[in-house]
Image 1 (cartoon, rainbow, N blue to C red):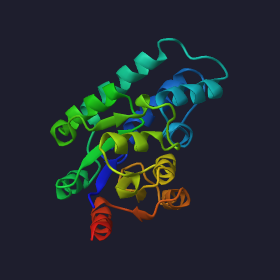
Image 2 (cartoon, helix red, strand yellow):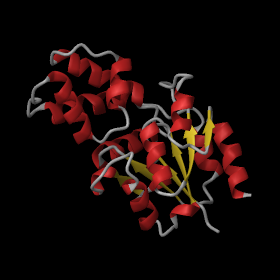
Image 3 (cartoon, rainbow, N blue to C red):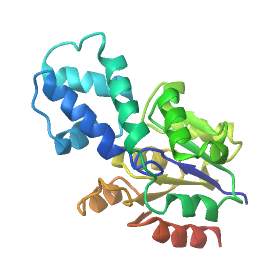
Image 4 (cartoon, helix red, strand yellow):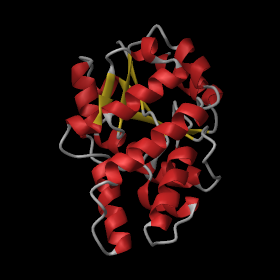
Length: 221
């Protein structure tokens, strides 16, 4: 049996959630609704961008300016180019399981993923095996992006191991019939997040990539 490892991106490989949600909180505050970093995590994290826009508009009680998507993208990518880092242990985990098929399945846009992979020096590790939820009709917690990734990689869902940091992503992987490891290695994680990942259906929850590697080896045995 050949296993496929499917990585979420933000909060799993890229330690991007603090940066992206800081930018979003600042922007929404500028637009008239005071928003903290914790508010942004709670309201917007793990969603596709069109879902973020809808949630921000609901918070504001009005439509966003037409310039919002482009300006938010510009602000975020500018900060990423200067501040983006790998989640601690991600490089070692990717290298440790380089003998297995692997891909990324993310809620982020293809353009954002391309910039981030370039900044982090991971283009050669994943090549064309990067799948965005913009290619499917429904975002997480629906299973569509994971099923799409498995189909493109020619792997049965039951043979896939998903590494996810968000409850919605965990739920999507479970709904796809995959084994999900909930990961708490990114800098935005809080202790209470463990229970959320477990409640979403994660078969295992790892505090670090080192712990995730031990779990993965047991699954492969």
